[in-house]
Image (cartoon, rainbow, N blue to C red; front, side):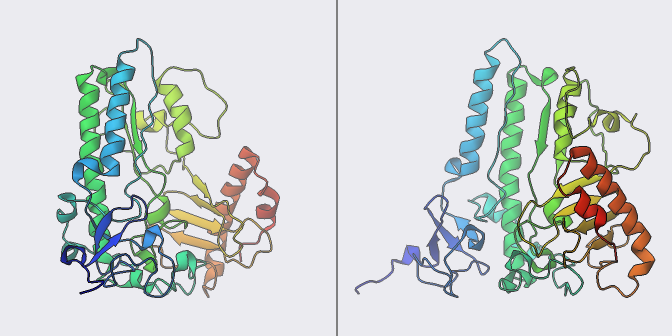
Length: 363
């Protein structure tokens, strides 16, 4: 019949990133719609975070495979040069669209996944109650649908994990291992349904807390774990210089070497993050210690509430101790202490927000 859909295309849609087909799952915004639909079921234009399913791209031709092979080729070129080198390899995944290829897509069954304890957080004392279009995208608060996203996210990570193994094997093969510093990290996390959200852009742990692994045989003992010192990406530059024996250069960060080798002492450390946006409805600044996290806007008179989380007793960040909390006076002193440390940081880096934050009241 005219305009009939070929059987092999039923349940398929077109990806935005690579213009290749993928088979949708129930979390996808076009799931069950006619193949080739350019709009979501609610009439919105499709965006990358709306895309969930299994890609039809062969595993040897995924974006991750392409990027990894380019990294290996670069390693081989650099190894032929008799001089030091720096190589930065950036993977797109794990990132929207959440469409792993086989066999990785089948390695994690959605029915085996567990949604976050915070997925049903009412967020009635959070400045993020409407963040990431949370109220429009209610499917990310569905504890069954979100399992598809979690499984696909793990599948994308698994593919990267295997390629990182191949890259490290190439470092070994080229005889570079003993004299090569390797750092593995990420620029942001993914909410995966925590607090009923998708994406990033918020200071919750799922979004702002990222992996950091450093390997330097002979200088860093394998298995060394530093899990009580919040640190930041800005600490990587001085850390690299320190391990390479380069004299200290001006930097907002500090070398992590003393934490890694255990000589850094027991002083509490703080990590600061900034959401540099003109959005006046969200917090702009975060400071975190091992136990406490404080968020605030960068304007003294902003109506955005201040936030204080006790991560020891509230690891899922569902109980803001400030804001509308009727017992907030009890926690004002701790909030003030965190604000004080934030001011120290803002002063150190010459932030234009220093005076506004200094004038802002805790409660």
